[in-house]
Length: 260
Image (tube, rainbow, N blue to C red; front, side, top):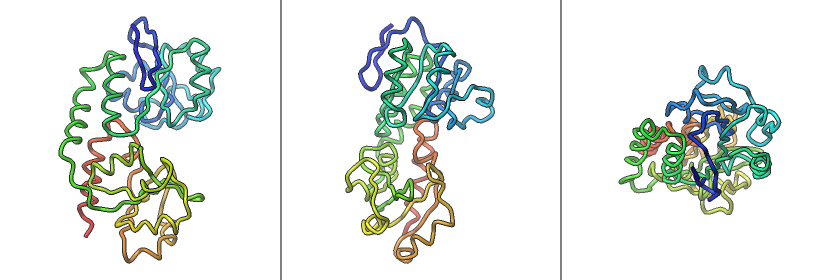
């Protein structure tokens, strides 16, 4: 059968894939959540969930430097990659070696729902994926009006924030947030902290990943502590599309509703 990935690339599959390598941590979690985990034969060093189920799987280095030789040695019939997380050169090299590489390109919650539905069909797990996808579709309907100005930081030195055209930014929108960094150029804009704080957020989110923000980072925000709320949050809830999405939207809605 012929299938197309999110980049419009055509992939020829003789049957639903039985030997899958995931180069995307969130996709690894999703594969197990829809019952395809027993088909996963390799993952990245950054895949951490579901911890017990993936403990025995071969690790194939990081998302940006996968061990292509090791991938080929595992004889996968499908490798799953993400445009944002994986390098084009690795996708092209694996494809040139005869490997089927399915690339997602998730830039919004709606993107995620559509692309995971398509991938579920490729894997033959549509029935198992339906409840999760239905919960996400429900979260897409009738979102609260965006009333809280949010600055979601993802790194420091240099300071980086969630910007426009991103899954995390859209998740915050569906939670009732106005992403102030969306006004800056780039999907993950870099700027001096003073410039980011000048965007006048009501709340600054400090996620646990990709940069592990903690109490030691709070002094950097002393100048705005009296006028806006500083909140630590679960970075996986903010940035991992898949089985966490509907609960993440609900939790961020509760968080934003609490702001006076």
